[in-house]
Length: 615
Ligand SMILES: [Zn+2]
Image (cartoon, rainbow, N blue to C red):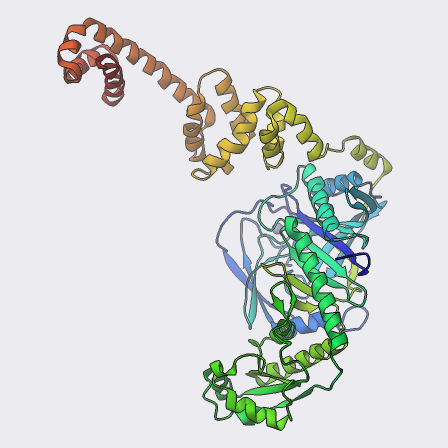
């Protein structure tokens, strides 16, 4: 595809969680553990008018869809701030310094005063109903192989609560994640093509990790993509996590917009007819529909002219046209739609659809689509689908928020949120940033991971260098590599620990423990073979130095035993020759009389030494 000719416009937003000690506005730890919630708190959301007096459509839809919010509370990672029962504390300095450092790495300007703002959130992902966010940099620059892009703004904000479960009636959120510092980096819309978008996303991710304060693992970095083409509309794809495939995602969204525009040109504009058709379904044998009607539900139908054969037409990747409508029905809380462009015999609804078709004067090329649900929901869904279907005939693309699917297509999730949703956070005073502070940050900018990998390649080889630079233990490697064998240190922090992590709680080991292990290896108190034992015992609560001492002592006594065994074997060589391995019982008694050690240990060494002589 010729993206320039298509009028391709694209900007991305990267959200990176920070691995600071504490959360952004309270002193709870950022590091999350796999633990069960200790309690839960329930809240309800009302669609309220914003500052401007206008109701937010996204808020209203969220309110229609799910009224009750349940918050899982984790005492290890939560305090009163996360449940909005205590005002936020002042902004975490480590997080601010990290965000400012990133800002200067992309040559962004830092505002003289940093003001925390409240950004309204309507989906319940924050207990307070808003997210705190502060602009920390603007007008930065970035260049990749495909070209330049401007970093419009860099924000430091609090992470939302993670969705635990969402049902028709309620949304359950986990509060442990709420308040983790998050750096949001937004580019302008000058990205040239999907490939360029991937380069920019990868470069921003690399620079964020270069600060040494980026969290790692699933969900710790997310991308939002804004994309449109001429004749299409701005669509925002939220929360994409797979940066390496961001180009595929964008390409498929462009195809969707282009195919929908083309289809609009192909179709004649005709009127959609819609009505309540419950009476045609009253005697239905279809189990789903009859259950709906028994519960005072209703059936709504729409006539979609000229769409026969088109509902199953692919519009991007594996996505077909009907999905555009189904998504809108689902957004109103119904299960889906049934229509005449699929095999109705499977549903046992041929007769009922026939009556509706007659009623609506359906022609062959027209599609009848039906929604059966609770009266209110069915009606809202039918209206919503009708509105969306009208756009199909004009080739208009709705501006909306979409979610990425596994196959890199996207599905509708909600209308684009309105923009006037920010107001100052009065609980937190603004922070002045002096010129000297910016100068100091500039003098201490970290080298990028790319630069470091280049250097380490020469020190420890290409493969290890790439592994250690991609590892969350890069900082530890850099701390120890000068004083100990750098290859050994790199190997330890990548391969060795990765292996041991599968069995032991390696997380409970800290810098001091690692230092003790490297010292032990250097002084030969322990050997590489002993590392597993050290980690195992330290992870289960023993002190590192004591474990190492213990192993070293045991080694010494092993040497003593071996010496005694060899002595006895020399003295009793006749017996060994005559009886072979059968002499072991008798020799055992002789050795035991000479050394102070456990029978097991003596037996093991004796057997080994004896075997060697017999062979
Ligand atoms: Zn807290």
